[in-house]
Length: 273
Image 1 (cartoon, rainbow, N blue to C red):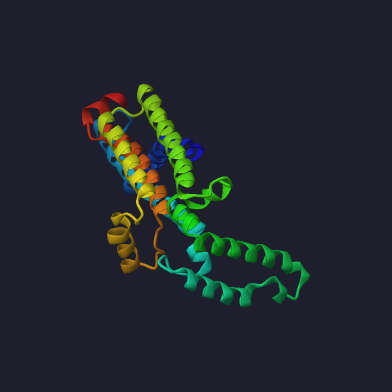
Image 2 (tube, helix red, strand yellow):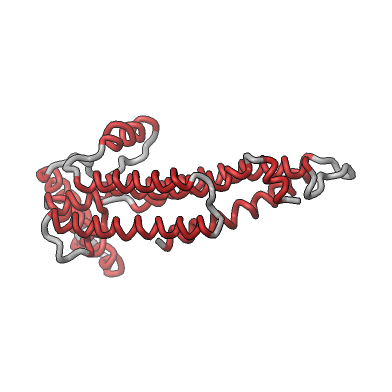
């Protein structure tokens, strides 16, 4: 939730600041020295500001999506840490771990200064192996991510699903509450119904992902095939896709709420006078 609040703060501070700087730079570059520049409040100035603001908001939208994806790629997952594919079986995991043991076991490190690093890395690899060879923990990890490591009392799939659904409830009620407060404050006025409908739809999709024995078709039929086809981007697990969708939907809410008024030239002109 704190990440969402920081994102909201960034959205309501940075685009306006960057728009002002960009408009000043635009006039400095394209208007010759000595020629009059459009003054604040004039129709030309407002028209330029509207167009620049739309470009800035769209650029910031693309940046936040890229940033969310970049963070997911940098964090990785247990499959990537072991260097195995998402569909690997227990036998393949054990074979891969034995090869990694030959390479990274702490006993093979001669320097005492590097031994602690090697030990920590080997413990992490062993943790990855232990999670993925356990069908219950693997099912939960694929859908809920590394947060399951903190749920020491969970031992069955229903245990993990109960904890996951509880976290979903906290997230979506908290997010809906924040959006409602922001709406009452007048920051997000456009398409309130569609905003909450989209949030509810994402919640239903996330619940489906948690409860389904298979990966969602959106992931297996569209997202992962496209990622492997057009780039070297690693394939997503369900919890990574859901994390990205959460970020994406909030970002779209805010971006469209800022672009909407800009498309009404009359209201923008009046607000800048």
